[in-house]
Image (cartoon, rainbow, N blue to C red):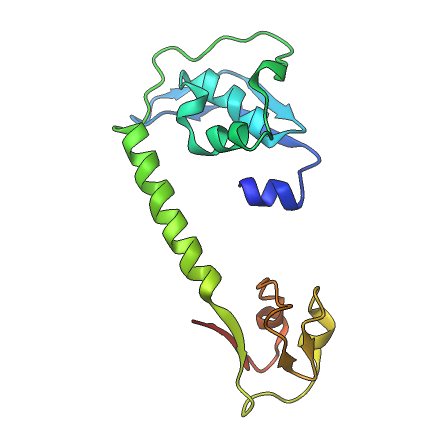
Length: 166
């Protein structure tokens, strides 16, 4: 989430809290919306509503560490009452740490992948050349130092001649 917000911050984030379910399936109806232009601030308020210390959430903590969120600047307009007895999944901080580490490992593995053109399947339609945002593809040849690994070329190739490989 941190990288996504750095690339393209959202114009607005809206979280529907008309009806919510906790880890035990208990449904509550706070009947509210949480909205803002900073997704991290919206997450911060949602954590407070659930009774979680916001800095126990890895993405919020990372946003604060990166200077993308200053908790003392978060404004709450309207009535604010945390949900009483909201149950989080068992071992929430431990589980968050595991998910965070596994996610980082998978992200590193994914970043090692690169688009590869199978010349036997390529029809030289140049769809990949036209869609590449970094102009790293010319006549079906990929300039890897210029490639940003967005994989747009994979999506537009009509013959599926481009695949992501290690």
